[in-house]
Length: 252
Length: 289
Image (cartoon, rainbow over all chains, first blue to last red; front, side, top):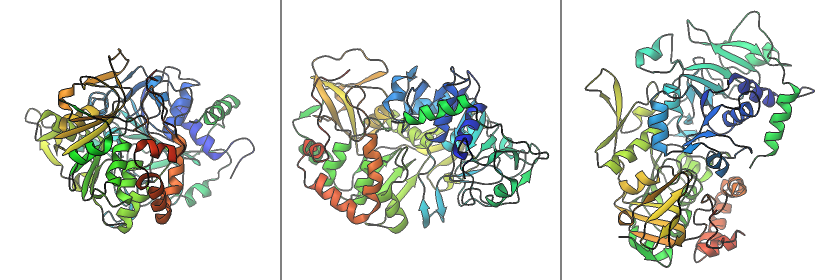
């Protein structure tokens, strides 16, 4: 599925980058979140404070890193701190404005699984695990999730709840003592989803260019709520595309 | 007081025994890969491997049957995908079943902090609303000063921690810089410690984002240039991202994995021969930038 001018993947990355504002403090994982944050920094958010769990604060990578451990991230950071410090002093203390996560599975309340597909003790697929995600999702003031839209990923019931989103129904985050507001946006290659404030269930709020609603519904494992009228995500500008492609060509 | 060894093999033989709990730490940087290879050459078994981010060297140890147990918080090939030997052990019990103890990064990091601090447990805010807490040894604990519920995680005290670092001086002090990860906590939490370094120098120079571990908390130091490969030592070499990508194909198939390990680890005498065998040269000493 490819439009004349851009791929769905490029649209997803650009939509994620647009969401980040200059001077925001964002904690990113490697892959799409990292790419989107670096893209934002190379466009409208030059002072975006990018933090990786490898302890780098204020990274300004010129080239796209393969991992959170690439030298490029340490060498361009304002400061590098230890792993306990990045999680305890910076994340747990509430200094992170946006936590930016990926996921293997997500449910209608934006809870996330990155642990196993199948039964925990006898998994069909053993995934890498939690990493920093559970506490990023608890302690960041806001969480953005980016992942490809598929039936395997958008499931009615998670095989394992690694990381809390909005749990079940409205209000339960604060009842449990989760300090951050939780997921505010899910960005996919097909569109944008945001939680309904009353039920905290994901609602499709924007359709990416060239995608029709039936396609999104066919790739979602529950009866998806849809905003009406449903806008179309503004397509990538020439500058956004050129910057993204230049970055991807620089990948370490 | 740190003892200097001319070669890695006797240091590993003296410090690490079958059945030990071993932390070969390194948060994507300064990973003591040469120590892991030496454990494989010496045929160590029944190890408990501890690390926040098990990557290629733990995949190799697991695939070669050296580990009975893994304590971890994220097990993948960073930026590439799965660790196929780790998955094969968990999903299909090959070459034998692997017991896992799973944490989040925050949880395991605080378990090391507690170990380094000589405390019985670490305390943090975490695991709320997820299922991991039921799979580990974590215990909810109410703050005695507020109503908040926190999580207690038992301290991690490895029998042995090994790390790689950029430099040691002649007194056995160790200097590292760049992403120092959880090196300090892992060293201070351990009963015995082994450090491989890029280079032994007469004097340390001041470095941005650096730390020094005094020689009296270290048992053994060995100069092993590029001892972290395919990870790296900032200032000496670069992360070998091509190798991380190549590992995906090498490790996917059991027989291909075994023949690769035979050729490049079991049939090489030491780390310099390993580097030669995979076409990565040793850097010259004194190349720190």
